[in-house]
Length: 163
Image (cartoon, rainbow, N blue to C red):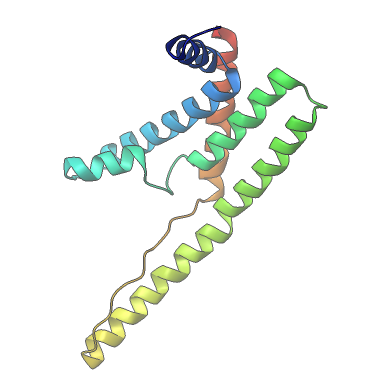
């Protein structure tokens, strides 16, 4: 029987050799890092804390990390389990749901929040009433989603060749 340390070492080593896990997390990291680099290249000057937020957590923008993650998940499940497996079919359905949400509901909600904030600001300026803006959640344009999908598949194929 293995002791606790040996089980942890065995589990973490196995996890780091798991194509599904590594490609999904790797795609997320690549998408977020790309987002941060694009943010910097576009000339945005930010405090270190804001840059960390961009690199680690910010949603919306190019490329879509949602799309990268679910496409990496689908591609890696395809490689590991096969085209006709239940897990692959589930991952494709899950991906379609996430991609639709990223382009549709989240994007429209963000646009609505932006308009609401503009209207609230105008009313506040005219009436003197206090207005607290609502959070504007960024969704994705179709191009951002397509680039995210390509990124996820490319990361998965690259990892498949090396794992």
